[in-house]
Image 1 (tube, helix red, strand yellow):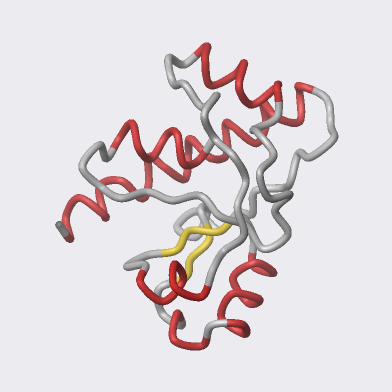
Image 2: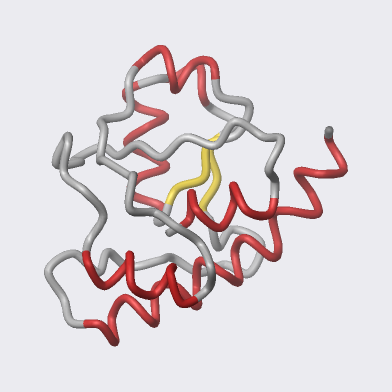
Length: 128
C-alpha cells in the first residue's frame, strides 16, 4: 500500500517495495488490493520480494514500518545508516503489520501509511 501511494504521489521517483521477511512472489493481500482500488490505485501487479543488498545500498531513502525494521536493515546493511526512517518518523508512530488480519486492521494501517506519505512527500520533493 505504501509503494502504491508513494508512486501515485511521486510518479517520477523509483519506488520499490521490499521486505525483510517477505513471502517472495506472493501478491498483495486481497484487503490491501481492495482498499487501494477504492482509492484509485492499482496494486494487483505487486509481488513480494526480499530487500537485497544492492537495493538497500543504492536507495536514497528507505522507509520502513517500524523501528525494529529500521534497526535490522541497518544491522544487515550498515551503509544504509542515515537513510532508513520509519514511515511515521515525523509524527513518531509505527505502522503495525496487518498480515493475516481482517479488513479493519488493513484500514487502520492504510490510514497510518497515508499520514506517513503526506508527511514524507513534500520532504522528498524538496530534495529532488
